[in-house]
Image (cartoon, rainbow, N blue to C red; front, top):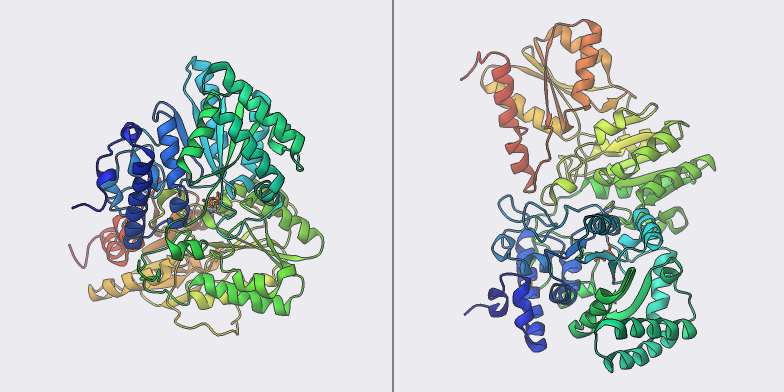
Amino acid sequence: MSDTPLLDAISGPADLKELDYDDLERLAGEIRHIIVETTAKCGGHLAPSLGVVELTIAIHRVFESPRDRIVWDVGHQSYAHKLLTGRKEEFTRLRCQDGCSGFPRRQESPHDVNNPGHSSTSISYALGLAIARDLAGDDHHVVAVVGDGALTGGMSFEALNQAGHLRKNLIIILNDNGMSISRNVGAMSAYLTQLRLNPKYMRVKDEVKEIIESVPFVGAPTDRIIHSFKDRLKNFLIPEFIFEELGIQYVGVVDGHDIQAVERDLKLAKAAEGPILIHVLTRKGKGYPPAERDPDLFHGLGPFDIETGKSLGKKEEPSYTSVFGQVLCDMARAEPRLVAITAAMKLGTGLDDFARLFPRRFLDVGIAEQHAVTLAAGLALGGYRPVVSIYSTFLQRAIDQLIQEICLQNLAVIFTLDRAGLVGEDGPTHHGAFDLTYLRMMPNMMVMAPRDQEELRDMLWAALDIKGPVAVRYPRGAGSSTTVGPDPRPIAIGGSVRLRRGADVALLAVGRMVDTALGAADILSHEGIEAEVCNARFVKPMDEVMVVELASRHRLIATLEDNVLIGGFGEGVAATLERSGSSCKILNIGLPDRFVGHGKVPELFRVEGMDAASIARTVRRELGGEAGE
Ligand SMILES: Cc1ncc(C[n+]2csc(CCOP(=O)(O)OP(=O)(O)O)c2C)c(N)n1
């Protein structure tokens, strides 16, 4: 007998409408069961998805997806949505190469409106869809589901600003659990807490509920209800309604785990004219005690033991992230002007110890990468040494700020880009595939990539002596260093390092591709091809002397980078060779000009022909297959 009989009978949102509220509660339990079982096996965004099970059920009962458009912000909380929209089978292989994505994907289902992954986009998407609907003369509903964390992102404010002005019919569901990945930060978050906790407000809310329950939900009475609701709230409430002042009707606070109550407010929203925001309170990790206790740890994680909540994955230690965190604490002790900045990723970027030890020098700006970069510019102008730590993919948000506010003024700001290159199961929205390209093009920017965690330590200390902008980019997980002591070795600025000599081909590699290059050299050596291997260390300034010297002694230089080839390191090497008039052949190995999907990192590298065996094969072919094939 199945553990999930109710869910098994649901092939789409329409089936939900047949169930009574007792069944719906049981269904919520079944959905949680599947979400916990699947993420325990495949990893994923557990706590956010557990928090919105009832909310998702209510949304799919009140609205008619896919005719009505449901837009999920970030999309990491969309597991219940996937299960209710015909993807139970694919969900069992969540985030695996042959399974469904951890985020909404248009290719997967007509119920997925867009392909999100980066935060704070939903209100903009939804407003665009609402404008398109009105231009086309259609009458469906558009609903954005945005978390209180995602609401801290600038784009959310920009979209609210325009939504309040245009007054299109648009429903914004604010899923407020008080958490971003860690506890949410900022004045907006404090304001939402005030709304939640204000006892006067809750009393008014109860009175209004009574009025609402006494009147049927049709036509004009609904408008009257909303107005009476708002008037009474306005009279009684202490905090002014920010949203109302912006021209967006506000309804809240509703318990997001009470399906009936959420449905009632969603029906109100459906009947309203103009933009309306429903403030829904949920508990992150709801229904799975370890996730309720530790919602930040269970925000997104790898496979774990359901009984204990303990991670089952092999701990990759010391990870680049943890080495960065420790080294930065050492640097802060030596440099009192050092300030660390994160954009809502304190844990992910390894800054938790720093935040504890140096609270006055730690700044979490919320999900606001653009602001983080300009804030750093201000701190640098004020005489401080900011270190901005942002995942490679999320720093894409701030390309303009990097150019205009940092590089143009040659400000001494250190950028540390975690999760550079392929990240694996989170897929194309999260791979750090572009940073070498976007950083290389910026005048004044120095770009380094360590081959292992020890070299990361050395590069971080070296960066502190640089008088302009520096970026250090490194991958998720661990490299080949098994321990990392505190004392840095000197790094020659702009210099690469030769690791192995060989006369047939030169492999010039960046960051984690250095170990892959050494692996390929071993394979080639068994086949009688001797490869020289160099660790580039610097993508900018590039070690041109080494490039020209390698070209003078080899028939072929192969460059290796875990970045898209377009605009990457290899193109820089090719340009250097061209300028030097060298006739040495060049082979650029890197990520393709298309988005790489989700799956395990080694597997993705293999598929892209970027593992040691594939690289050895490609090099051999390029050399003319003397020793094989
Ligand atoms: C631009 C960007 N920066 C950072 C992230 C990483 N991130 C994913 S979810 C999340 C927190 C979102 O909080 P909230 O919107 O409240 O949703 P919850 O997880 O609490 O349900 C963050 C910071 C991201 N996806 N996009």
